Image (cartoon, rainbow, N blue to C red; front, side, top):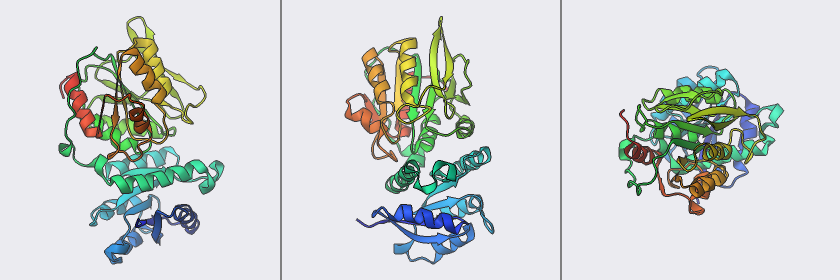
Length: 352
């Protein structure tokens, strides 16, 4: 198998060297260029023969001469179009820049390694970096392509109308969520809750991004909100999002309970709380992500009489979470995020 060709664009020589060692420890990856700013990245893409041209560009956003945001649209105009993954600082400013890069066409992001988290030696960082590089190389830009190419799923057999829609996602999730949410009606007739594995600060920016797509109104959950049709709440970074019944109302709570499946927020506690609050009238959708968060909660959903759908393998950056649900026989349907969004819109109704 021909190794994936990666370019590293970062103004720090030390960072470029450390990332090179992580990536090239995997025989499926070859670093073909190491450059210090966006201008050098464009020159390298222009001058390299096609057989040596980078397929993946790992792009820092803060650099001298030409920063990543300036270079990003010019990189994406190159043919064949490379996949761009931005490196993001774990700060509020970094989160805002990351969401701007995703809106501009970047496929995903990786948090910059920090000394407090073990730097590039952190196993979690290495796993995330390798998963995203290899996953996006396989998928390409499938999750961000125009949705008109997606084939709608068949409408499932009629069952009890859901009271709440819940979506869980992780690696590759921001673009998958965007592709699905923009297909939902503005006047979605049920509330939507979403859990995306992300650090604090990033979830607020992701909620703002999703809110601009024309589907349901999206906000980061703060606790104490009443779930209402036509609105979507995203679990905040480092807090579990729980739902409790208050008479006929469904109300959000935030929890600092221990991580589950190594994650906080995690999908499983949200799904368990939904089943406790409204029985089987839950529709769960599991999108791309590493691990198997959501598997236990989806078992509870199906056992209670609810419905589970999952993203298909071909469009998933990592078919861990949706794959676990499918292998367990819990997914009634599977498809691309666009197809899932179209099918949900058809099933639930509501006007755009």
